[in-house]
Length: 213
Image 1 (cartoon, helix red, strand yellow):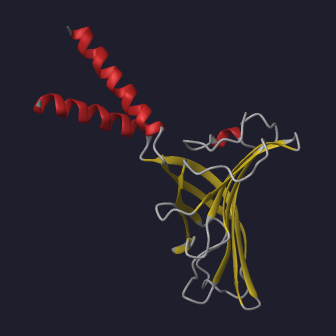
Image 2 (cartoon, helix red, strand yellow):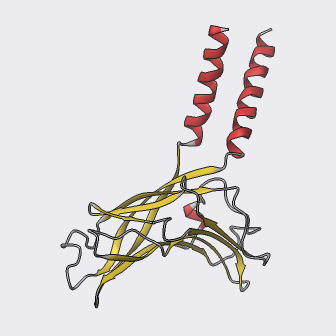
Image 3 (cartoon, helix red, strand yellow):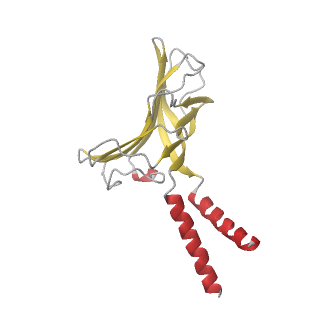
């Protein structure tokens, strides 16, 4: 009897996990820090400099079709209002604006037979203080052994940061003739909520249903 009960619980967890894997929306938490910057006009008030921490998230829809016909490049344009990209540096928010256009999640497998790439890029972004243009919000991971990916399919979970040789971000923008650029290292990528949290939630839900049943 006990083994049957355990088996049913395991089966329930597997079914729950399978349902999560098929979920359309994935949210990834990003952390990092600035390694170099350029803002001679002090457009952002000196709030961001070398060592400033990066925090942020991006949410994408895994059901979006690949817009690139090649077998090595997957380009997934995100336009749903449930998706988005928002990075924070020194209390300043850099955020995409879907009313101006979509943002992109890209998976490049064996680029010129030399590297694998994972990128999240927005060129359609909200203004800062109504007058500073944010031109680019970009995160790129590069594997020079081109061994990370075996296809250009969109990932259902965060890529393993340690598998890439480069993991960088770049944010730039301008006001009139004055420009700013902030570049840095990405230090972690984590799914929200974390997979183990979701699994425990599933177990708790099943236990609760059993109790009230």
